Image 1 (cartoon, rainbow, N blue to C red):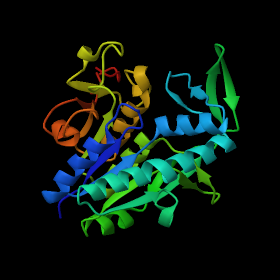
Image 2 (cartoon, rainbow, N blue to C red):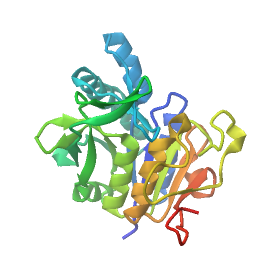
Image 3 (tube, one colour):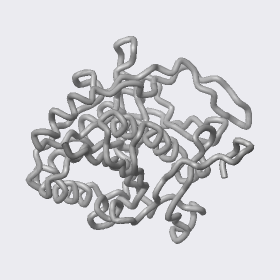
Image 4 (cartoon, one colour):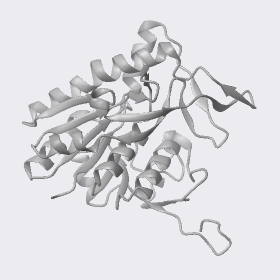
Length: 280
């Protein structure tokens, strides 16, 4: 049985969802199995602004920033992803002749998460503990649900929130959710599409895109600028879960998935360790 390709469509407003969906349609028409995972940062921020919900970021000591999801923001995240982004993607796929099923992590217990009880964040130069954040880390994926759909030629369109151990929803990073999905289904590749040509050595210079980026097996990622830190952590998690190929590529170009699989963007690997145990 051919293994699926997991594609993560970034939520950056620059990412072209229509081109991604057209490319997914071409892959499905060629007999490929595809699972589409999405975020929706632009839609979340827009809806939060309309509803007057504060938008805040938590920056960990290692420099990786995540969304602060208090109770009000969790509601915004759910509304934006399930009520706006997902229907838009499913509709765009339908226009390409693709049967698609929109699922959050709550549906059929698709994404199970361990709730984070506290976060360390750097605020004003000082490390503080944040306890009102409703987010979690994916610990299990109902791969059988996804495999049952892809076996019938249906593209699952997956997003947070996830179901925590207390039976309540939590936000989860969509890149890391995509990595967990890719590992659970034994994907042939994970393609993380973003609003940049790939991983940039200098976030301010698009021409500094790296052909390859080695990430240490543990510890901080080598790049955190431009929102890349979480993507590299997700890439590492997918590789350690056995996904053979992880690519960070441009979601703004024509045929972005096939372009990435053909070699554009940045290929992520796990860094080899020196004899002293340090990455090299």
